[in-house]
Length: 405
Image 1 (cartoon, rainbow, N blue to C red):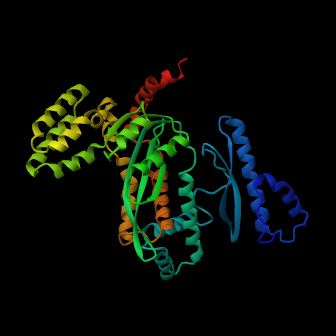
Image 2 (image 1 turned 135 degrees about the vertical axis):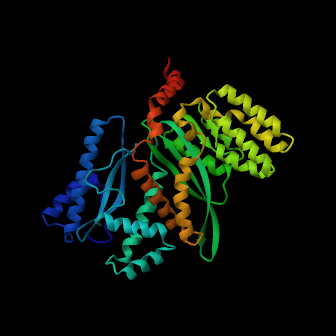
Image 3 (image 1 turned 90 degrees about the vertical axis):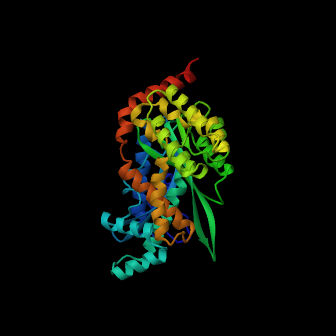
């Protein structure tokens, strides 16, 4: 097949496969034949999957580069709207043909090196027989995967939705430019955590940025959320109420605790946090609300503006107390997003305090997400698992009226 000939989609492969086998295509090489056969197998898998899962639908194809021994393969992989289907003929995500330990080494280099060139230099110094182009391909695949994550369908129902933002600086030519990473993590009805959005947008955190990300989740299928957890970024609470009117909105209590030290003298801040700790441990939400009101009254003279703000949002700082005890701490903070930000912060520091390019920043984000979802998040956390039945009962009680005629 000539280089300028476009590669057909899998539903066009039968005629070409016949032509290859009959020797009618002059450039019918072994790698093309293998690519066609694998694409046909993947398409057959999707057909069988759709027969067994009629609620899902076909949703085109995406490109995937693989290696069979020394042969490079370029496939058109079929996908579905839900994103739940993945052909068994493919190797695990981000793997092509390298042994696992070598693949992990390459991902580690991408994640922790200052730049892609620095990673390539490390490989050369180690004397490893890995072509420089392989790292380029890995970064391209990781970047594509992050872009796909931000466009594929998301679950209709979530027990919890966490969202938070992080500032980073990325080098563009001879200057550093500020970007914001907007991340949303969902807790599925089976208790698993999944990253639903991780968008790298230019500029500082903004309400318009959050509108783009959160409305994007709704456009991709999200409908019902039991509790949404985020910080008190200006305007975000009102936006959350408008987009998720039936959800409890929890303002991150750790963010509030950090602000206490900025608004109260040191000794008063210690006293405030000591009393707040007792409120967080309260078993009864009504008792906690009364204690929170007393706390605000006690300190209102020292920081009237700050106290007025948190007092007006008391129900959103204490929403977590209406949930089962094992998940109260989990539902009171945005720590689920911090798990990603923490890994990215290590990569940022290893990169000299900023990222060399947008593709490299996206690749490092994709690595952090993949490692979390394939390791720590591959099964529900113990506290979520223990409260899962109660959480799903709460979800059904709140939303079952939606289906009532």
